[in-house]
Length: 316
Picture 1 (cartoon, rainbow, N blue to C red):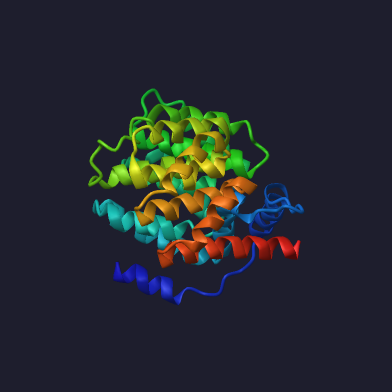
Picture 2: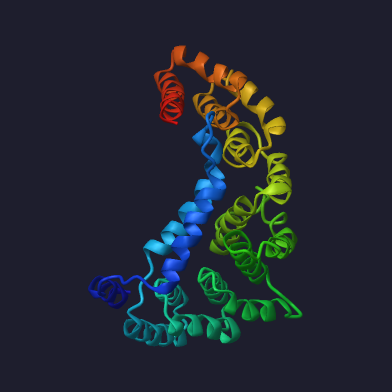
């Protein structure tokens, strides 16, 4: 691990590649399409859209193309992977994903086809998809034809098709993504499943990120099913940070109305987060009332939400 860290520290300066330029063009298109600027613009209503954009921004910022260096990292991956040191293998894999080089893409395709670890194959497929280059889709389509797929393999396919469906013109791939996700994510969203298994964490977080980016009825159905399993703070938080940003106002508004009257501080804070996303006059009035709340934390948050919204709208 120390060897990997030292290599990371001595790597050279990042260089802009054609692929990065293409991604920047995609980024500008997404900003135009997803963040409309209107007279009544409410920035709180675009949590999901900003999440989609921020993930692509991170992908662009972290990329490099010093391809001679990636060859050395790939060699080191094979060394630790052959010894069965999977955690280190995955760390090398993640670092290789920063290189926009044909060597890296060929490497990912090789891991998808030959590595014995479905976790390694999962990361390789996700990193390959983030190239956003349709030339790699045949590899992913071929993998989807396997007779038997594990849960994490289905998550990998769902995630890869989601990335291509959300970030490229291949929007029809969203449907393929939801097919794989629906097969596994409902079973692994239950709070009764133990959370101590790291593989469960990958599945839970992967399902969450994929559905939130996919949006629409597919995502609303998933989070609604999850909502039925939750109570109290966790139910309000899910409604505020997932269902409300997806536009499920009829489902979430009654939850926020009830929670904002609670004596539990965290319930009220989450209700404010949900109501600011809904952003109607009625919702904003409920937030304004909390400016007089005796709890300083609640009052400050309510004041900040209203102040920031007014500031943004004055600047439009």
